Every structure is written in structure tokens, then in C-alpha cells.
Image (cartoon, rainbow, N blue to C red; front, side, top):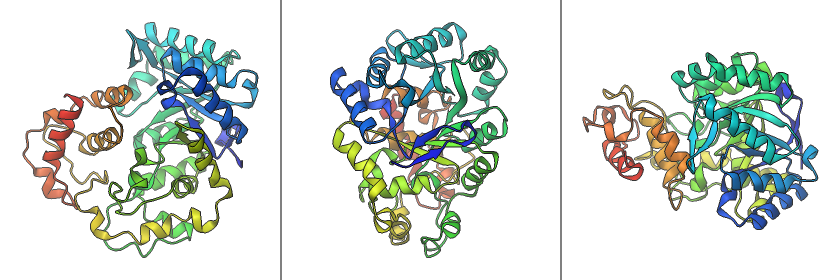
Length: 380
């Protein structure tokens, strides 16, 4: 397993990492065995945003005896209230939830103390201008967290984090569907030449990756497989299927990216992800897949480009669509995703069906119809 330096943290992390969200689906012994198998394959970084005791106990058991060999991303602001996940900046909940995480993980410290899930300016201010950030800084000064990180899906918030001077790394959602700008021609400019391939990415996201590289702010990747939709030509917004190796390679070719954190249900899935390390250049080549995608594959598919703005009801249509697309890939809507959707403030249920956004959509997405589907799925 190849290791990469995670920005200014100087931590060396495996290119393929472990996203722990699915652990709670399994019996504890089975889930512990998954973590230990991952370690045997060379994986050494794991994310624990989950506040539930079961997931935390599984990770603690899984890395017991080799705590110093693991890099743990532990989230500050992810709490367990009344048997439910709640993201909060209320210190009455934040502090005991994080203390619980440290105890259950073991070792008395967390390698990467993650400011949990900041996706808008209101929440950024709630984190950065309150007792919350004082607590984060105190944890860092006391050595309870070795480094300060932040998780977000919003490239503008990620940019602010990179510019902050004290946030050392970012957990960010990276995959071709999230990155590619709207198609205004063909994909002929995309090939194996990295500089030319980068030109196909939304300029703001491309600028973020370059800024992180410049500022030495490392990136770990979530949602690298787009909920598995990229593996299915019928669900992929490109109209063609990608492989795990191609998705991993895509993320790892973004500047500043050090590790792609994949979710696993089986040891075979771990092996399939780790096989990236021995894959040939041809097997890793995502650019030719995008280049050969039928242009009509974008028709009716939201690529989260933002052309639908502005909305008279102030709905973040692209983010609603992103959460909806992620949710429908799961047998049931994950509570974490539901909470993140609800945190948008203006949800799909606020849509009045004016369809002004549809006139601006370059891909002919039936946005009003999708808003109704999202409102039905999430219940608001």
C-alpha cells in the first residue's frame, strides 16, 4: 500500500482508507474483523463521524493493540441525543460526545480532530465565533487532538478552511460527477495528460484543489464512488460505468488529495479497493471513460452545476438534488443524510413549482418533479 503525506500534518496515510459509516450495519465481531482485515491490506486511516456507541466501540476494538499504527479522523460536533444523530455546536452536547469518542477509540487522543460537517456560512460562523472553536483549540493545545481538520461538501467553505491558517486538512466529497463542469462541447480535451484533464472540472472546485496544494492543506475523500452510482451505466450521470480503481484514481489525481475513504460491507470490497495499488495504468484510466461517454447521458441528469440559481424560495437546488441522489442509492435513507438534508433550511417541500430553474438548466432536468420526489423521500 502506497502512503501519502497528508499536507502539513506530516502524517503518512494509505491511499485507500476506511470510511466507517457502514460498520453499524454489522454484528460487532464481523465489523471488527473488517477493520483488522483492512489493516492487513495496508489501510491505516479510518473516519469516525458516527456518534453511536456501537460504531465507536467497533473501531476501538478493531484498532486495539495497534492504535499507534492508525490515523483516526474523529468528529467534533457529531452527537448522540435520544438514540439519534444530531449535528450541533451546543457545548452541552459537543463536549461529552467528543470525550466519549476519545474513550471508546482508545489511546487518549484523536489524530485528526474534525470540525464536523460545515456546509454554509451560518454554520461556519457558529463554529468559528463561539465557544465551539475555543474548545477545538483547547483540545489541540492539550494534545487530545493532534491536528485540526474540517469536513464539508461545500467547496466555498472548504476554501475558507484552507485559507484559515489553522485548519490543517479537509474531508471533502470528490468524484467525477461532483467535479465536472457542464458540458458545452465534447470531451475530446480529456485524456491522460493531467493538466488538460483538470480543465474539465468546475473551475471553483479546481481552484480549491490547487489552493489546498499551495497551502499544504491535505484532503481526504468521502463519497468517492457517488454512492455506487458511478458503477452502473444506468445510474451514472455519464451514461457509462466506472470501476472502483478508476474512481479512486480520479480522486487521487486531484491536487492535495492523500487518501480515498471507502465504505465496506465485506472483505471482498476491501480487497477490490486495495487492488487499486496493483492496477495497471489502463485499468486506472478514468479519462478515457469520460471521453467516450455519450453526450446525451447528461440529458435529464443533475450534475450540480448551479445554473438553476437563483430560486425564489432560496432552495439550494443542487444540494437538494445531491442529497436525493445519494439517498436513493441506499435501501433506506441514512439518518445522517436525512439530518444533513434538513439542515439546509429551505428544503424541497418549499418548492412552489414555478419552473424558472428549469429554463436555466443546460441538461433539461425536470427540477420541479425532482423536488417533489425529494420532499416525498425525506418527508419535508
